[in-house]
Length: 507
Image 1: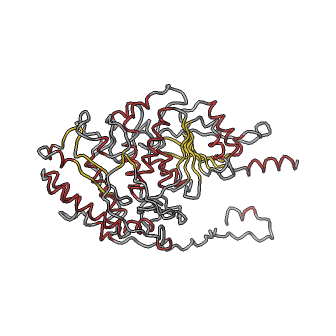
Image 2 (image 1 turned 180 degrees about the vertical axis):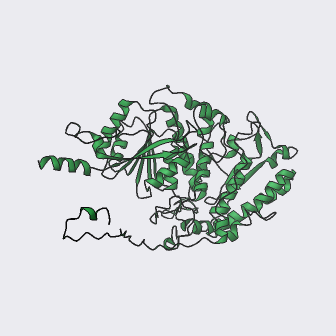
Image 3 (image 1 turned 90 degrees about the vertical axis):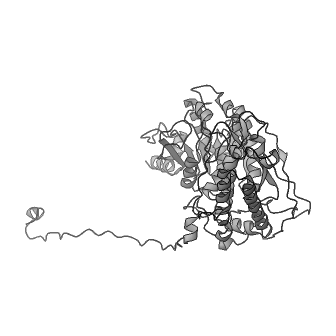
């Protein structure tokens, strides 16, 4: 006799015990194309032998974005026109075609398939304006030679090529999107953590071959087979001190790039991309950072401690996580309040293709942000990659009219309020009243108190429009600590507040 049968009244039929049944809906069928062996082997690039300069960055609580090296040299940041190879490029009117045949190159966010984004830069690959017929102005950027040359303090010739003439020490490197070369000097700083021009050249060549070329074209440049790739042979020539062989291989690389640019190989490859691969994004960001912000990184120490002006950076690994969780894509608007030197704003514009806004109050970070923006835009053109519109405001975000207008249509809002004072956080809550329904706010400190409940007394609080989820970031994802921490995702959702008022009115 069962336990419940003892208490069943006489003459009644006991309830039959039923086995619990869990019904599940069949998952949606999704076809996944397995990667080919060639694609799998080309999933990443070899790490550069150079490392970012962290010495000064750590002294002021900063870490420059990895992985490329960063310079602290005091060279004047004069923006000069670079030399051209004077070769006309083929005009391809299909600027961003083949949308239905996009290759699965890169995966900034597996949750977002942004087929509306145009990946090809509108100015790259053209020598004349397609509308007016006038020549396209040359790309203006900071050459590596300007921040790393033997005329600067602590810089000297490469020990491997010390006996080579000065003329041989200056070389040029081609990029996919423009006919001009970037000037490099084969120099080295006495500090091994400094910007390394030769290592950056190798990383650039590897990124081009791995991400912007078909395997049959990229393998001759970057191949793991001994003696099978240009980069490998250049590294070997550098080790052996064989300058003629080094220059011969570099010349071969530049010849391949000119040909691929003329015949449209780069343009076709980029137009077939779903997103920009993460290693390429970080390399481009690092190039812009090294030529602008890194030159004056010590100036970022000038802030008042324990105030809302304390400066800190979110690193690419963390911001990429935020982009994924908020499903940021080219159709959306991103705003960074307290954007510092603009790192996250530029990252969002390149990786997600979104309209990207930043606002910074402090003069020096805002000045460096403007310089980095100009270099970033030039670098994207050099690589042939399109990016979202970038807007940077030097002002307080509490009073700036452009930011106020943008917030009304913003989809994702980032607030690094880790060191914000309580009064400023309260003012931010008032600003959030202008956000549209469904907008997402990402912050380092919560705006919704723990165990918050809507009551008659607090019904008018802006907090009641926010639905919050706590998340965790891990070590080396922010500049001010190597430890992990919490961050918070708030979604503007008025449904709970509406339900509260409806229930109160029904009483």
